[in-house]
Amino acid sequence: MDFNENKLINQTYENDWLIEETYRQSDFHQCHFNNITTQDIVFENCYFYQTVFNQCDLSNIKFDNCMFRQVQFNNCKLLGSDFSESNFDQVIFNNCLCHFANFSFMRNKETLFNQCDLSQAIFQDTTMNKTKYEECRMIQTSFLHAPLKNIDLSTCLIEAIEATPQDVSGAIIDEMQASTFIHLLNIKIKEAL
Image: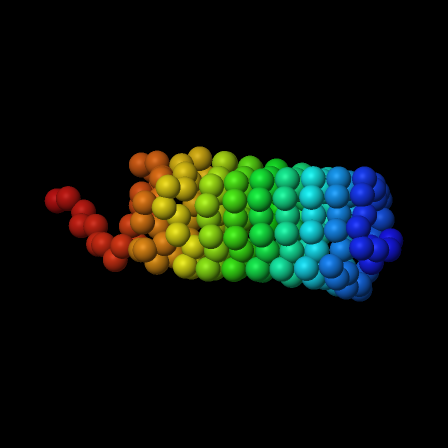
């Protein structure tokens, strides 16, 4: 597959492999990626607009400083994927496996993570404007300098997240999740006699 053209419009890519390539400054408009597997792939300064990724294995892919607008990732494997310094605007992750994914230095606008496994993912120095998490799994997920104020985590399974008290201040959680966050506040609970 040759993505080095300046602009790719209304293209569909199916049942293929991408191996050891770097794509720079390519625009993908209204493209569909179906059942694509990647290995050692880098997208640098690329723009994805109204693009859909369905059942792709994008593990360890690097999206370096990319722009995603009205993009969907559906049932994708994103193990160790790197979205550092990317911009997300109206992006949806549906039922994606995002273990060890790196969302550092990202700027989010209206991003939805729905039924995703974000275990050991990293959100560092990330702008979380209008980010939503619905029924996600967050085991040892890091939110460092990624304020969760007004972010609703109440439907998520959360265990041993890494964050500062400032990062979790104002997050919306349910009462059962409170014990998960108590260690971040350096509070000790004394058992009643």
